[in-house]
Length: 325
Image (cartoon, rainbow, N blue to C red; front, side, top):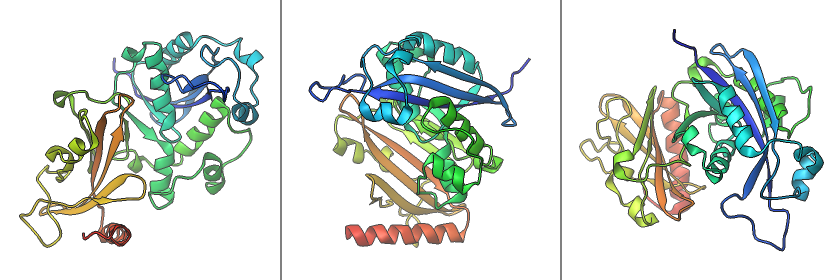
C-alpha cells in the first residue's frame, strides 16, 4: 500500500570554534549540537515532533555568542547522544517518503557537512530537493528577494509567540506554523535544491523541473572562468518546451546576456516564441574542494506585471554595472 509523503520541518543549533588562538576544524567549522523537527502530513497537520541534544566531539566548550543566544550549557550537551546516533535516529524518524523544510538554506547544508564528517552521506543522497520556507515567505508576502528573519515573519503574519527562539525545536515549530500559511499553489515550482552534494562529472549533471521552473546543477569545473564560459551553463531555454529563448525583439538570436547582481548572482530576461517571458538566475558556487559549479534556475514569468518588474530590476543592474541589456 502506498504511503503518503510527509513534510519534515527541522532546525539545527550548532557550535563553532570557541578558541580564538586555535584554527577551526576545516572539515567541520560548525558542529551540530541540537536537532529539532516537526513532522507534518500531506495536509500539513502536525503529527509528531523530534528533539535531540548532541554530545560534542570536536569543540569541547561553547563559543560565547552561541551560549548567550541558545542559553545552552556544556553540562547538558554532554548528556546528549553522539552525532552519528542522533542523526541515525532522526533519519529513521523522518520515514521513507518525506520532504525537508527549513528556515533558509544553511541548516540542510550543515546537516550534510556533519554527516560527511562522520561518513554518513550515503543515508541522504543529493542534490537534495527541499522547501526553503524563508524564500517561500518572500515570494508569497514580500518582493521575492527580501529574506526576513523568523521572528519578523511571525510578527508579519500575526502568529502567536508563545515560546522562545533560537532553540531547535522551538524554531522548527515556528517554521512549521509559517509553512502552513503558504498556499498550496506556492509549493509547486518553488522548491529549492541544495547543491552541497553536487555532480562531479558531466554525466551526473542534475536537472529538476517543477511547474514552470527548471533548476540545473552543473558538474565541477577547475576554475570560475571555465564554468562561466561553458555553453550549457550559460544557455537559456524555455522551462516549458525546452526550446532556446532569445532577447527581446531578436527572435532567432539565442545569445541571451546575463547581468551580474548584487550577491554574486547573475540574472537575465529572454523570450520564448510560444510561452513568453523567461527569467533566469545563475550563480557560480565555489565548493569545499576549491572547484566551481553552476546553479541555474529558469522560470516562466506569470504576467506582464512580473515581466515589467524584472525589466526594471535588470535596468537597475545595467545602470550599476554600466552594461547593456
